[in-house]
Image (cartoon, rainbow, N blue to C red):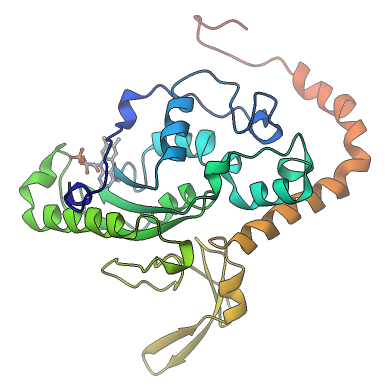
Length: 297
Ligand SMILES: Cc1cc2nc3c(=O)[nH]c(=O)nc-3n(C[C@H](O)[C@H](O)[C@H](O)COP(=O)(O)O)c2cc1C
């Protein structure tokens, strides 16, 4: 409602209204066998894809399930918001004229190139289990380079659906998130200012989920950027080198490097591709698969 109050045109899509099957890794959305960005699976995926491509921004609100986001979110990501909408792949496709990742015709969906913003709201029943709630949602915005303007975690809501309406502060904060997202609509990625309450440990995604090894280097699990840790007494400080910020997962350069990495791995393995049919045969013939009676073998 906050976004609408600022004049944004709003549509509400409820995940449970959608029938969206799992990605089967056929890669037709990358190779355009069904047309630019199209999926072979005929279900509500195409409806959602069109809605997201047409939108200048979105707010994703989800409950916490089992310490993280619910499964529907990840099914949607894999079907609609993964390589299919990778802006770096699309830029390369246009430049090279050889299609996404060098395959197929070069006609990416032009809507991929418009700026998009996003906001996240997560509701949880408890308060000790939230570390894996918000960070995974960022994997839905990586590929399409949507700038996350604001993120909100509301907890202590028990397991009763709808309990959030009892928490006035949470409702007010959610309204503000809507306004923050609406105010950023149309802005270029680098011009979007983060409006979340917690600046977080990572200067890019503003999350706190870090990988710590046995050196003074720390890695943001979301952005794949490396910082240097310093400890003085009880105080800990982290510096993030400028070159890391330029190639994190949230940048086009980071995504381009990821695409290059995939192509390098592909080139390395290419000479051995012809071995696959013979070597895979024994696994395909390994007949211990069981299925529900309603499914064909
Ligand atoms: C399958 C399932 C798993 C859940 N796991 C968690 C959990 O790990 N942590 C938590 O805080 N709440 C958990 N909950 C509670 C929901 O997050 C809570 O019911 C929800 O925030 C209610 O929000 P709503 O009013 O938006 O539906 C779980 C609920 C379900 C149905």
